[in-house]
Image (cartoon, rainbow over all chains, first blue to last red; front, side, top):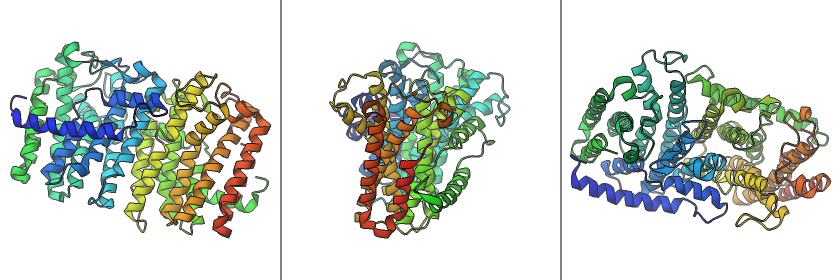
Length: 307
Length: 307
């Protein structure tokens, strides 16, 4: 974290500890019946993720001036959703990934049937948690957040992006899919807006809405979220492209057949695009003044990370 | 429908029309991008299901004295959840079913990856719909219903039942699973309470809660739901055991390796158990007086159906 500095690092460390404790508390204990599915859920949730989405929920709430505690259920919910999507994406019929973050994937350890169901259970538990956001947040706001998160992971968002990812992988010579953008650059942009930026934007909006943000601040945060969400995925794919298998903790270049920014634009140009998006995201925070400083630092951290 | 009679048949016909129209309206059009996943979702939702769960949402609302219109989003939501669970259950890694209701299953038509994602998209859309239940229902009640439905399909409910189903199939000599009931009869009872009765009970409670039912009526409807939910699954398994492949629309006796009531107790005793449960369910409605008549008829219909 070259530019982000020691203070952000310490802040993120404290918030990650809170998120980990909340995740421990919300997941059924591994030994409770039926234990195999609880073990599989915990195996994948506690697999060393960066907790980016929960951190964004919390940072957006704090940027809006709200406390951390009431948004923890939403922070956990978006992490459970992210985890369910990774479990399903890794399945043999999807990306067929045997390793993630240096460990065997869920279906390798627990079998495919348990992996499908562990993902389904995390998906349901996420919505269960969202309904438990306590007062003083009013029920109408909780419903709005729940709706926005549900929308962000449907066919207009995360699932749509995964479908396009799979279709793109199978059809390298675009355009062959009805409705698909004619240009490869536009297609990959569309995939990653849906696959990654939609849930990241929904996470930021969730934190802000639960903390009582007004429409102007929400609009600024939405613009920020879309841009850093896209930049995050680009950097992920760049690191994947250039990284060694050991440092990345997964099989490097396994996404080679997929439509990604480095595949379409090359590594150097992809880094340039990510930096430009990040700068646009930071620019979008201007209306928040000093209040936006935390999210500015987060944007730098995401851009300059090496893993 | 020998005892249910023409009136119930006409009532159910009208309500099914409303449910079909609401399902048509809530699902993305098949031609919208990305169309393959929308086609797969629609293929499985409009595959000739009985719409039992939506009908129970509506009947419970009407039993409570409420209108039909405001509960239609919840009625659709539970049907989408049921459909997602069928798509995932049919996958090669799960029950590996190639035919359901006389048609090829989702993964046979669209491929396994699209089937997994179509299920995931229906799951998310169900929660999206629940958050759209309109006034005069207050937001706190909508949240309560959403939470109860989420709980009913997690590891304590539907997903838990499916896990036990799979484990039971692989381990015919009980008890081998930690925490599993020592007696086969108790085990199959536990599986079906989770796999089927939990969502059916949640559907009934959803209709009643949205229509403003009090705690005494809710308790009566919960007892009813658990019993007719279990009876419904037993009759399903009995019909599966004795039915011809053509009449049932799926491969008869394909559940032979699974732990079901007919496998454990035989067909005649299973029918007797289902009838006793149904009678208990009807008995539970006594506090509702004449108001419970519709659900009494529904209980008879479910018990005496031949498909």
